[in-house]
Image (cartoon, rainbow, N blue to C red):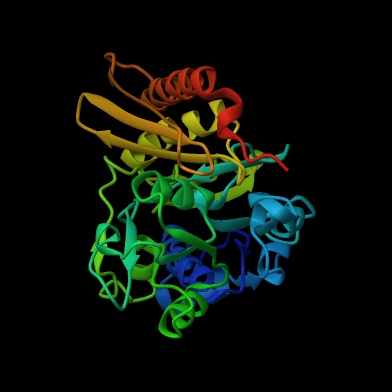
Length: 319
């Protein structure tokens, strides 16, 4: 057994959060030199209920934004009760609290949105005025941009809850992240997948993030779980998020594509009603020996700033 201290992992209590934390627990245990059967001994899971989990009847933007899924977990880390947290990166605000960092991102799952319906195969096939369920302002705005006739209904809750509401006829279709469905063994459920170039997903969608105290960022076990290509792509997408002051009150999509020598990025932001869409696409060729993450982030910041200058007040959901 390794002699180094335990790595205590904080996670939300939802089925998806526990599935994702369990995946990373095994990876972290391996990085610590422990066999899978000893994962709980060297990297115990500690469940923390967040405000975002407790309040299920309103949109996040009405009760404080994305940070409500992370606040209690981050407090536990800063107080020394846990050593790291596993988050869905798309749920993370653009900036971490002082003293904390997004220290490692493992290889990303498929970033696309999934379309689920008991009636039709694609969003385009929905009848006039059909009810589309989502709690995401981005998905609302992008869907209304393509189909302004749709009746978008607020649909929060975990994956099982949303699927049950679809089954019960509370919506004609719903949109969910394909990555979460696949991690729950439900990757067969979508009727179709949304093209990420035409309709970019949330910045960081499909990726998990390991958050730690900043002082622990050089821990060897973190290096063992980082996936450099994913971290470069995420740097571009979250650069755009930071430039656009992204929160639950801004509908932002970003999709990075990486090659051996370059990165291309599509960023869009929309007015909440979908009527106005501002979109940029560009490519950066990596310099020899350059810091690729820094170059990718600079690209995201550049595109995000250009969209913000053009879209301005049209992009924010006003109280």
